[in-house]
Image 1 (cartoon, one colour):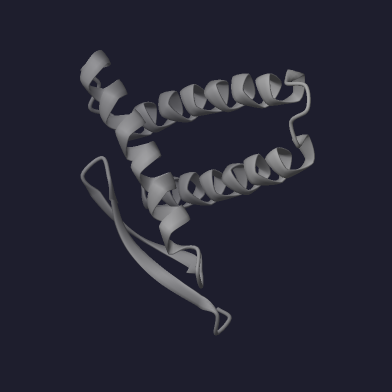
Image 2 (cartoon, rainbow, N blue to C red; image 1 turned 120 degrees about the vertical axis):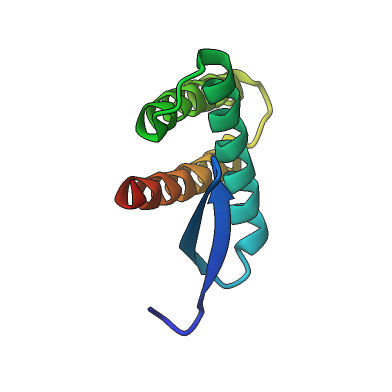
Length: 107
């Protein structure tokens, strides 16, 4: 790993993960972890499903759906800096992909 990469120990749905994180991005990654963990907790509670892989897939689908709705709303908003919003959304998408890929490896 590059010298400017740190590792973060996080907990998602009660399981611990060590995730690579670029220097200075810890706060953003913690926010992503909180989002994913919250969505997984919500789905596990609503469905009473205890299979982490199924809960993760459902959480990913819910987050993707919310993301697409937000992206479409941003694109439709007049006078909004869509290029900046698109970059931020793509960065969030990349972070979520990394978290979910790591979670898949640990399952």
